[in-house]
Length: 397
Image 1 (cartoon, helix red, strand yellow):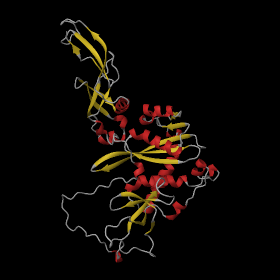
Image 2 (cartoon, one colour):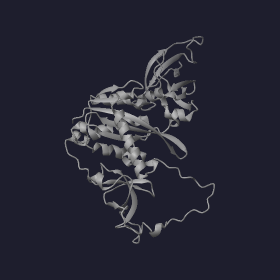
Image 3 (cartoon, one colour):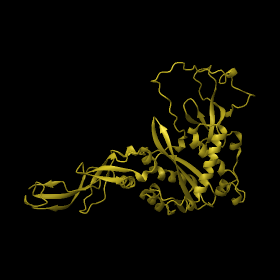
């Protein structure tokens, strides 16, 4: 491959779902020498490693990873993965986005995505699909700096076929074939919208189709334009603009208002069941602390989000503070969001198994007036299989 480094940048958007706001992140990977870009939508910083692994699986391993030093991008798990593949890393200075070439490409892709939404009239909920479509267009557009080659050609050495981009435009109304109509009287076609190219499903002319009834993405190759008057489907398009659906004349105040949610294709989803969607998902989780001055490793539980300003904590994770309970309520402490992520990450390598491992120290015999006396003649410090070290357990003779 000609390209030997990845540059990654991150975008943030707040999405409303079921009356609550969620952070939705976008990671853009740029191959520095070929300008090939890939867009990934995630709901948490914790999914960065998965997106990196997916991009390496798709494009190949780079020689260097350039990022903006976000906590998720310099975590221990990411470092271990880079170490395993012998990938170097480099981070830009804080608030110096100009040091990362991916920022320029991200602005170009975002500008084109906004223009696509403006020109096609697509709803705002399709912004991620528009961003991925814009990235695809740039990957298949010739660049003067590459000797008028497309980024994909510079990466693979093969001249790509751009017919898939010329057949339909983004958010074009199309008819797609229905696999099994429910009744013989039903039309063998359904109405949908073209919202992207299916790079990993079907042959080269397979598209992502939005079903407006279910708001789901389908992968179809047998489609035709519904914007032409030469061959309309009159069972789907009634004459004189008549609407088959009965309008709601009387509305109740108990009627639920439909909340628009972001639409994205299946290859944007994560397979992880432990993905954190919002800050409150951390509450109730437990993790091991670093050893204290006496060498004891205690377990903490996250019990409360301290910052009451939801907007600030949602958009600026570095401002988030949590109250944690140490050693089953023995005392409380306040920890930052990044600190908690580090400890949770360390816990992933030590699954919770409550089994006795070994006795690492003991005291005794002790008299009742001894400062370390805990109701027995002998005190022991026990190490458990999950990594916790506690002095609470004691034996009597």
